[in-house]
Every structure is written in structure tokens, then in C-alpha cells.
Image 1: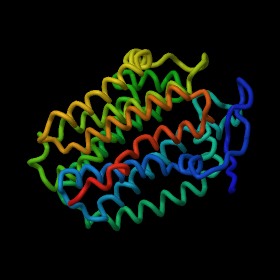
Image 2 (image 1 turned 180 degrees about the horizontal axis):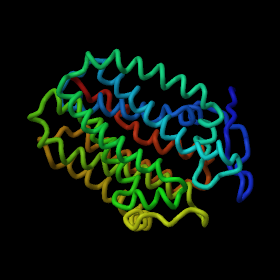
Image 3 (image 1 turned 90 degrees about the horizontal axis):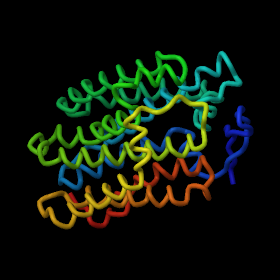
Length: 303
């Protein structure tokens, strides 16, 4: 089995290089997890609403999300340039990106060229909505990364916690292609977009809780984040029940969407209950894999 060099904590105050093996760890460390889920849900939302998307739409989504996540992790790890012993707030993915930063930067350059070639094949309405969303995302993350240190970033994110922002931006991006092709679906899909945004935020919150368990070095989380972390199981059960209820009782709804959301919420809760028995890198990757539930519903989908 191929092995992959990355970084994990070896001491309370240091990160050391250790080895991880397996495709799931590789999927996460190469920043392929988020783009895979984004492309899958983009395709799934359209198909569940009988909207046919061109392949260019899902490809552009995957490429754009990979560029964003890879760049975000490289920027998070930039403190290692000044202080290689710095570890506060950094995880295995950050050390992996920093160690292979030249390859990632080259990949981002190639991906940007591929994305530029795909743009003419997208719906003009979708491009317009993506420009607006990209402006909001860029402004938010530039403010986050302009602040040096965890405490400073917490102050910048005071008006909107990062976990909530990621959920909203991620959900908006995946619904845009469908709404751009069929604007009349916008009112009907808004509740499902909010449910999916909640699922994505819970995904981020679970990861935050797992990675900061027992940590006393980071700045305290945003009050909203703090409240959510204290009630994660209850919020997840509520989301799963909401998705299940809509699936069963709202016969006008595109039922595969709330059903997949409910399944993913249940899987996140299952991972949370078994988190201590799972390797941290595998657990982090599995949190994103839990959002791949549309794959379980392929047999029920048709255009």
C-alpha cells in the first residue's frame, strides 16, 4: 500500500512528520475531498430537479473549489515560513500543503487555466451569480488571512463564524447551476439550500470540535460557534429529522435532496460517537465522505 508523508502532533507543543497510508487520507490531504463533494451535490441537485447540467458545469465547480481549498490551506500554513516550529491551529493538511507547496502552486496555476477554458461553456446567469459569490468569498477569506495569528483571525470572523460562512458559501455554490438554468425553481429550492448549508456547517463544526478537543492554546470560539459546539448532537438529530420529515410528508419536494441530507447528518453523528477509535486524518476525511450520500441514491434518479 502506498504511504504518504504528512504531519501530525507528536508532542503537546510540536508537530512531527509521520506516515499515513490509504486512499482516504490521500483524498483529504490533496484537498480533493471538498471539490468531490461540491461536484457531486451540484450534479445531484440538478438531477433531483430534472435539470440537465453540462459536464463543464460540474468540472468547473470541482476545479474552482479545489483551487479555493488548496489556496486556503497554503495561506493557513504560511506562518511556517517564518516559524517552522509554529503549530497552533495547524493540522496535518496544512503541513502537507506546506511541505508540497511548489506542487500545489503549480497545480493551482494549471487549474486556473483549465477553469478559464471552461467558463465560456457555462450559463451566463450562472457566471453572474458566481461572480457575486466569488466577491463575497474573496472578501471574507482575505480578511481572515490578512489577520496574523489565531486570535486576530477570531476577531476578524466575529461578525460571521468561519464554520457558518463556509456552509453558506458552499451550499450557494452547489445550487447556483440549477437555479441559473431554471430560475423558477429558486423559491422552491431555498429551504433545501438552507438545509444543505446547515449540513455543511455541521460538518465544519464537527471537524472543529474533533481538532480542538482538549486544546487550551487556541483563542475561544465565536459565541455562536460555542453554542453550536455544546449542542452538536442535538442540532444534528434535528437536521436529520427535518430532512426525513420533508422526505415523507412533502410530496412536492425533490425528495432525494432532503433524504440525502438526513442520511449525511446521521453519518456525521455516527462518526462523532466513534471519533476516539478513528485516526485523526481518517476521521477528518470521513467527515467529508459522510456527505457523499447522493451516491447511495443513484438508482432512484433519472433525468
